Length: 144
Image 1 (cartoon, rainbow, N blue to C red):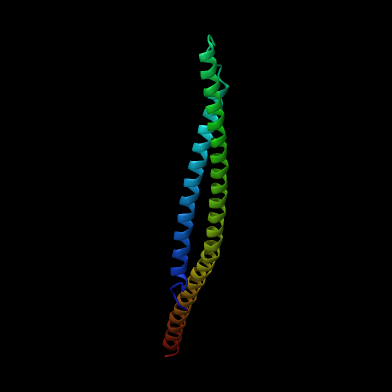
Image 2 (cartoon, rainbow, N blue to C red):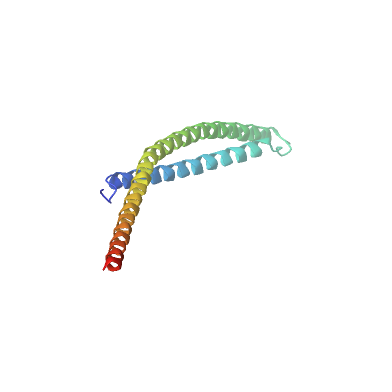
């Protein structure tokens, strides 16, 4: 039996791909949570009360600020949707990479178990041969 797992190189490649997919997923999660935090902050700022309006100029300034805030919030909502889509895509890529490597990992575990069993069989065979030789020697000494 071949002691080396014949698909070891492919398994290493699959594990590298899995690690890269995990890194991509972590990065996508970080971007998504960052965008969600900025969106939540913008919502809080928008919900806060405005300063008292004392003139038409301050009314126009407040209206312009609220309009700008609403526009920024809409942009953040779009960024949030994009980030969530990227995170879902990264998650799917990680799951696919993990699935590809799991099958090879199971094959390697089975191969390792078979190699171990072959080693145990060889060891037992050697022990049986030694015991048989010793028994035959002792048997011949008793007859002589």
